[in-house]
Length: 432
Image 1 (spheres, rainbow, N blue to C red):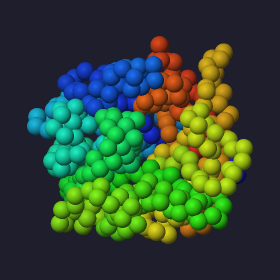
Image 2 (image 1 turned 180 degrees about the vertical axis):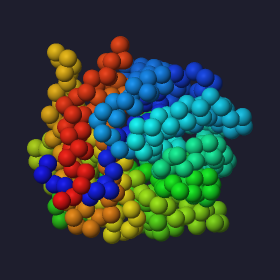
Image 3 (image 1 turned 30 degrees about the vertical axis):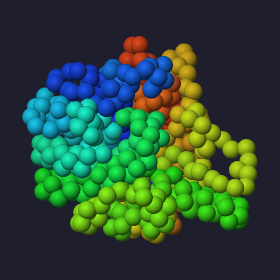
Image 4 (image 1 turned 90 degrees about the vertical axis):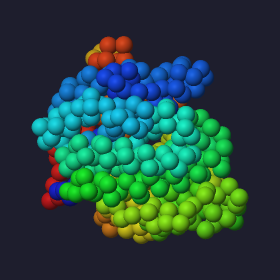
């Protein structure tokens, strides 16, 4: 890459608790919906679970050293709700908070900014037993959890995101059923989406009180929708897809309302919304986390497109278009909080060469730079992921990491992409 980024542009990596920590019964951690789901036959590839994963709970200091060696400036991790409140509510588990305090202090000691996501899909199972996110009570319970974490960690954490990818929490998990808890009910999914957004809004004043110097926001996953021809059908389908996937979650946050066209589309399935909910959801935020992997397209012929091991089209232009669209429609500071690709990496003769991933990252960072130059207020980039890990329903069959994990031995091996990213950070920190 020959482009240079602003001096204050943050270079980071991202992970999620259940995907890397393991130690699912250690130091008082309670079960989550993903423990239940992954141990249910047929729900994950090869019956894989996060019981051990990358054993990051025990190896966190070594993993932080690897980040330091790579020159990582900011680390986006998630806090496991079941470690903090094993029953979802009630008694706080001090040992759980101790772990994240060690992690945060370890990051700061190495000059790496802590960026904490409070919820990355691992709802405590006892709360699911009481209705989960379909219950409005869970939104209030989340606030108590957010209070416990932010009260302990405070401004040592530089960024707090309430949720990672509400679309996945609601639609992928409660309508499509691919993720925990694995339901197939659109009405339920839409109510879940509303309660998640409400929980976000309710938690914002608590986070601001406990960590007044930190930045507070939320992370959404976006999939831009394109019509490849001028047919009415293609354009209408693309608009509806954009509405259900993107606008249904972003408009309430920034406009205080659900998009009218999609509200009408859902008809009698729309969620129950109480007075004051939308104003609460639209509480001001400091940043929007943007997760981008691919696009969807309708009509026409996309041609012979390049795809990742997940089957997702490689389409860097979509990231540029998305960032400019979000700037135009919502005007909030943004961080690309996840972007990366799975490929069939192989550990050969002590090394892992992943030129496809290097090319993927290079092209998408070029797209970010183009968006910056065109006026998008993008403040940083977090590669997904630091480590190969438990890829949810795909188990350990897909590798997204910059660092290869040999699961039987837990050995970490820097891939070519990790070395490339380190060089990028070292040489593109300042704009000439």
